Amino acid sequence: MPIPRYRCYNWHIMKLSREEVLHIALLARLGLTETEVNRLSEQLSNILENFEVLQQVDTSGIPPTAQSIPLQNVVKEDKVTPCLPQSQILANAPRKEENFFRVKAVLE
Image 1: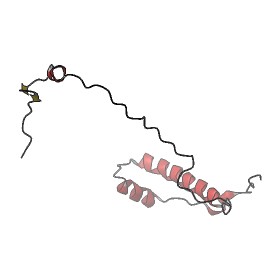
Image 2 (image 1 turned 90 degrees about the vertical axis):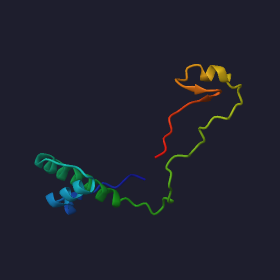
Image 3 (image 1 turned 30 degrees about the horizontal axis):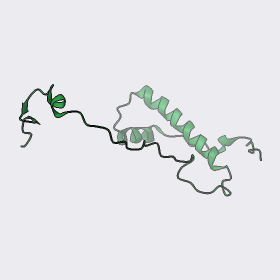
Image 4 (image 1 turned 120 degrees about the horizontal axis):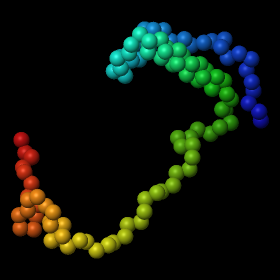
C-alpha cells in the first residue's frame, strides 16, 4: 500500500520560540550564543514538524513493539582454560608480599 502524499504538512507549523529553546538549553545545561539559539530554533522546529508528519501515518494495524529487530545472544560460550602460574602473574607487580599484590590502603 503506497504511503499517501500530503499536499502541505506546513498547515500547523510548530515553531519553537526563543524562550523555549533557552529553556531546553537550560535543562540540558548548555550555554548557547544568540546565533546558536536562532539556528537551534529553526532546526528543532523542523524536527517537530517531521514528527507532525509521522503522526499522520496510520499505524493501527501495526502491533506495538519495544524492539524493531530480533534480538540474538552474542555472548560466547565459557571455556575453561588453564590459569597462568602465580609467579608469572606477580612478576611485574610493583609491590608484592608473599604471593599477593601489595597495594596502598584506600580507606578514609
